[in-house]
Image (cartoon, rainbow over all chains, first blue to last red; front, side, top):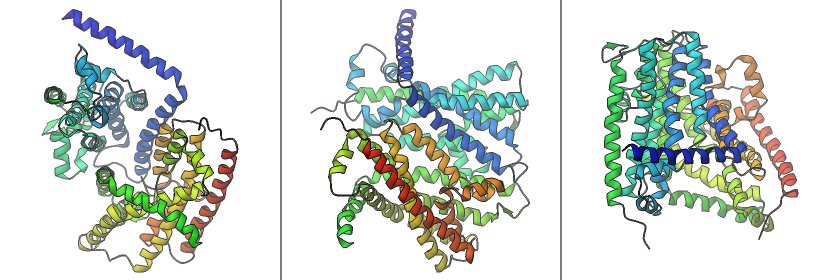
Length: 273
Length: 272
């Protein structure tokens, strides 16, 4: 058991070394990608700023609080984006053109092989914006700082990233049945944009979907409001239970997604000729 | 003139056919971009619900709803990305082929973009537009948009389309200098969604910034036609904004020609 873990760790180290070589080799591309993501996020903040020139608060939320939610949302998204970007390729390409054969032939965990094929440096743009916004919120003192919140912050960020990964893996795995599942994955992934703002502003149906069906609200808005020490959820007032539910969702979604993925690899048939 | 048309019309009709062939991808695009429009809609409803002012940035809540969805219709129609095609042609070495053919490369790209614009007008555009008009009259209790405004809007849209593609052609020239324009495209799109008024009406910006926008081509791309549709311009102001669009078409046309000449002069095509 420990031996296997060590082996995988060693393999991953080799991969990360490759990743740094890629960055060093194409510095301009790397900077462009970073800038692209950075700009996109920055515009979202500028939008909020302009709107708040006209109104004192949005349904009781201040500009600073909304910026924190917005920034916090970027961190789990960025972590997932950095490590598991290759899942997109499963959805669009790897299954339909038979490249998946390669993974099946090696004596290694298939999922590990899929994600270890690529690290996505563009994700650093999201992580950078997210960290800047969260740190500036800490400086402003609008975030609750104590041991409990600090610990749960770390837990929540990783649980959130796992929810992202699970949703991606689930929809990408459909490719084993429908061959190209990119469109489904894309639609599901874009739903995350809804959770950058307090979900109270949406119609009931949308709120239900992003809370319970494709639970991005648990990645962004709900944990963020817990760290702000505001916002009620199911009648509870900014309660650590939110993070607990987030973890349960993360684990359940992960088990389901991984089972579907595993089942998919069982029925996978190569492109053939 | 008719000879010219005969040459370039196939570019447009082929693009139209290509779009029809990949319907799946296109419906996906509509669906996802509608997400954005609905997020905007709910956000603005919450924003108007948080203030006692009847109008923000010169728009009432109902006008804002029209604004959000007309921006969606207009931008999906006029904002055609041709720099993608340029970069593809450069990477694949197709530019050389295009240079030896007796056609104008830019005109062929614009014709192709025209085909796409027509398709986007037909598929999501018209339906959302009609839906919006019905919603406007039945639910919001506003009156139907006048024929004059609709015609002026369409005229303005044609110029917007030209401004967008001519601008994007200039931007696409970057592809001759670097092969990875994905990051730049993202940065450009983010910046443009702001400067064209897609994200927020330009009237929300501080006065001094708006003055700067008056001297940039971006406000003529989306903001102008939508504000015309809303009937926000009258009399001489209307002529002024339409005239400004025309001026930008001419400026960007000339600028594109100059850049193109410079670029092709230093172009090196390998192999062949």
